[in-house]
Image (cartoon, rainbow, N blue to C red; front, side):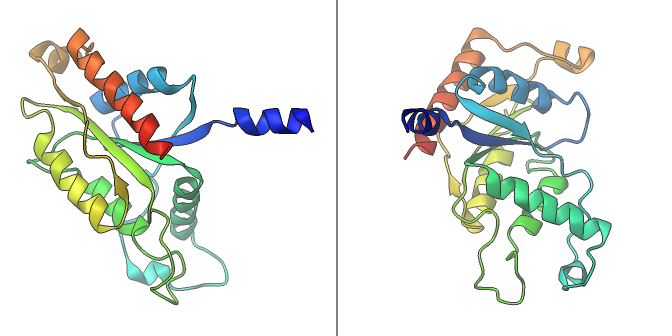
Length: 201
């Protein structure tokens, strides 16, 4: 009995990282890796692979006896989101907004899991979420503001502050990699700590 009690106490919460770029070594994947190092001793961290989900298409929602490959991809993504205690999004800024692939992902996730009744829950409803971004001189400010609006609209529980925005220097764009300054790392650490507290509420 004591061992069972101890095991319950040591179960760690699960944070799902979502990267808003498909590029293998994107700046935001690098930023997520730094955040993972800050959290891995206290949380189980996983990365959502949603590269195989199709464009949002209501025809694909129709119930069929055997799911197509596209339907299986959407089902898998929804299940991974459902299992997470929290979600942390790392996104670049495209034309003062978030990438289309993120919009497509959340369009799918905002749909009821059982479309026979639109009162049914979605995979993201009430899910705790925060966002960070590495990009140009705007520090992904516009992108994250619009993303926060989207996430709130689909009834997610959004931690708007603090969020970390990183302005990449010219050296990063040339080399394809970057290192956080002490101040930037401090900001990310604060966000990680605040998100931990947010998840425990």
